[in-house]
Amino acid sequence: MSSKTFIEVDLKAEQARIDSIQAKFLEVGTEEDELKYQTIIQSCREFNTTFHDDEFPLTDESIGKQLNKNIQEQLKQVKTLDYLPPHMRQPMMEFVNNAIKIQWARAEYDSFWFDYNHFHVYQNSYGNCGLVASLSAISAHNSLIKFLFRDFEISPYGVYQVKLCLDGEWKIIVIDDYIPSLGQVFNTTGCYAGVDNDMIWASLIEKALAKLHGSYDIQDGFCDKLALTVLTGIPAIHLIIKTFSNKRDELWEILKDASAKKFPMVCANKVTGEIDRKDRRPDILTKPHFRHAFTIMTCFEFGSNRVLKIRNPWGHNGEYTFNGKWTTPDGSWEIYKNDTENCGYWEMIGSFWIDFDELFTYFFDVSISRYRDCWSEIRLNMAIGGLYDDSQKMIKISVSEECDVCVSAVKPKYHKQRYHTWISIHRSDPSNPEKILQVMLCEPIDRISEDVHLPPGDYIMIVSNFYESSKKEERVVAIHSSRAVTAQFCTWNPNVLVNVYQNVVAEKGEEIPNKKEEGASIKKYSSDTFVIVMAENCTDDKYLHVDTRCSKVEKSWLSRGDVFNHHYEDVIPPKSRQILILMYRYKWIDQKGFPMKISYYLSNRKKKFWRLYTVEHFPSIAPTDYVHQTVLMN
Image (cartoon, rainbow, N blue to C red; front, side, top):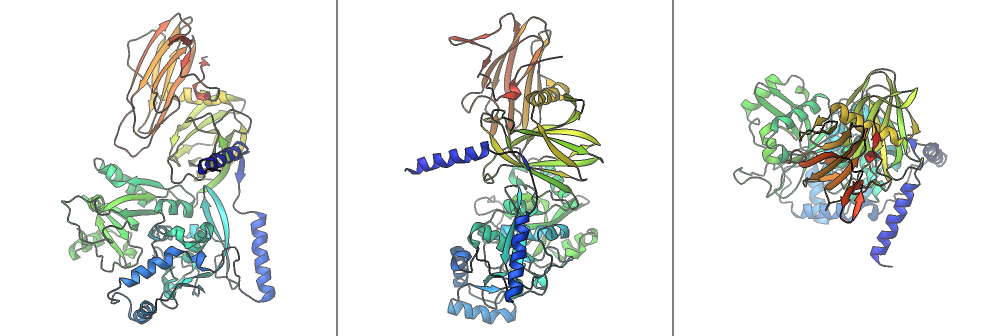
């Protein structure tokens, strides 16, 4: 069987799995997880031994090829060990001379965690800076670290349960406490993601991630955006810094707001070729051709100055020492006088202050997780799109106290691909489920929405996909709320769906200027990332003929047509309205607006002539294109 046939079979099997999904709420942990853990503990007690995880054996394959290769290459390049503490130089030299391999050893740590030890996570000889910088960022959230572990203490049997969020769902991973070791060289910091005061928590998370992927190799060059998502359960926002070159104030407001709310943040440097030639490039961050992740600890402004505190996960700058506007004694003192909130971070090794403008010069991107302590969440798995068969559901949300809510939607196995999800939330009328009282949110999201304020009451949330809507897709949806809310599934109703989108355009949309036809109008509801266009025919006996031509929009997804056809023709009957087109565009691009040309007129003709045919719509409205169905107005 050819590889192409194998792929086709896999795609068919995956689509069959998605088609069979029944909506369900997701819980953290199962009875099976707890039984497995208790069985391990009982066995260790009975035989007076520590836990050895047979599912992730202590072999070279579990360590992975890349880890040993990286360290061997690095040690061959060692010319001096003067940068190491004196007690580490001799063991390291012996290692260089004897080419000792990495081996498994049981972790020996003094403690599990200290509440005050924020940001003290260190990267050693492995290229997992994205993960370690993210671990450093989340270490400022004590409640999150406690959530990630079943027991927040060192286990005498060396057995731990770790929670990680994969494809939007919290998974529980059981591990032992044997970790790759270089003898005594790195024991003081816990091998790879070691922490001051010999704390074990970071190394355990690192091992749980390695177990999930079969070896530590997966962490080499591990994406910081994905790392933040896996650790917090909140899809990270990814910002390319250069896209803000002409709107720097907008990026600063994003960073300042994130810092004020204590959101975990990570950034990465530019590499050779990405820095303007006019900017002198001393090797101030890392090797010129290496992308390296850093933790953003805080940012603030005083007077006209805007500064950020950034930390290298190496825990030292070594030969790479940043020399910028605020690293001089006078500059440091100026910040010290004004930064009363973060004085405790001042002497943290590996950290330095940079000016906001220097961020544009030397850094490539920023990843932000909107994780907030004390927020609640409800997670669910569901299918969206496709022909209605009762597996699609709406979600009823009951709010007892006013709160802020944001919604995340993850498409499993698509963390490297771009996709979007349309989310609507409207206040509902219990006595009339099809009545739309007030639309609170109606827009596409790139994995996570902005915050929406909800007063007490009942609401309906609809999760949709209008791009290639003929087939079902899977989503893991999370409702994140500042106060606890309740949720339950209810029957999906296509009439409610189309009414929500038509109502929001009718209430918030702007009329498109055109030669006036009495009793007819075209309205457009839009933002930087989307546009919804609707036609209304208020006449009693005329048919509204509409011709819509959309210009090509960079990185966009359309609800009708295809990549080659952005031309639509529709006929709307009397007393009716129809959504003509929905478009979504990736937010962080330079192009603005959704250029389109729309013309319309009223006629007695019920259909249009299209080539040799007469049609009401071109392209035709498929049975699954519920949002484009023509609706009779009240």
